[in-house]
Image (cartoon, rainbow over all chains, first blue to last red; front, side):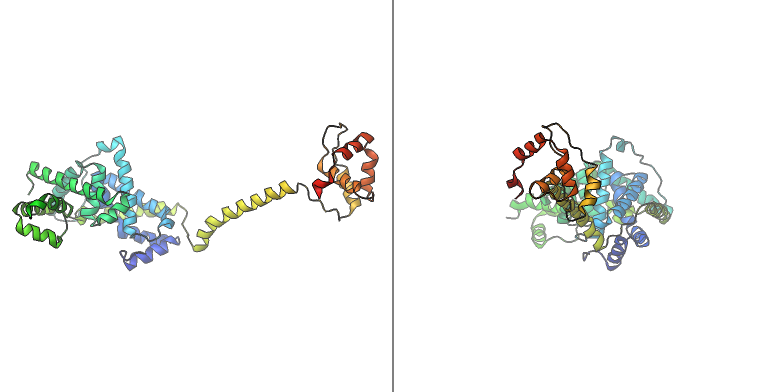
Length: 182
Length: 188
């Protein structure tokens, strides 16, 4: 297990690899929001994000024996999730997703509104990016992964990953100017 | 000197978007260069509008519902018990089966019939002789069992009941065929 995974995660992964469903359920609860946030930003649709997250964990369960701890468990999950999201985005029907499904946050109406505005803004920005740039931007900006880690995860050269990120930030800057975001 | 590197510096500033700390060489450049400092400042203003990972977390009730769904689904699938033994077995068993198959095939190819002639010859003659499928056609080949019995008697005195029976049954032409076609060198 890598140093990046904390002790709890490492233990749960080992137990789950021995077929312990309870340990795997704990892992699911531990990592669920991490994955659903990623798939939500990638697809821009809550229901799709939920479906892809569930598929991610089921695939993880099926292929858990292949996880050898060469990367963090979270990174391994990100890889599965991004592949699922990219496959989803290749489908023609992915452009018809709804943009207004209401989230159920436990928060005040004001913060809920602010959060929704933020999410809509990010969604608008992300949907302007090609899928490859979208993945790189998400993993770098939100997941705080290094370019080297993203390079391994996406099977792309480090230079390509940096270019994707740079282009995504340039697009963000342009969009912010157009929309008057500050 | 700082101005000359602006293009490269700005590329790196884009790459460092979202990072709290810049490398020293970029910080030093920003102190000297208004354009690059302005760009870095502008990029910094964009960050709050993107939120962070937690801004996209789902509500606890949604997480519970999804987790429950996954738990139900994995209950229907085979658990992956991956002990060291299982990992080795996954590789070793197919290899062992293949080797066994290859060994068996090569054994059969080199020694098609392995009959133990030390066993009771009388019994052999009774059980096997009745199954012989010898044809009177001179051009046809002898089946293996017949061939081996004839070979045994051809190279020694006829001592077995089966051998006598066989020699009684074969015609002169068949005996001639055996003499012409039987090369002991092949068996030595």
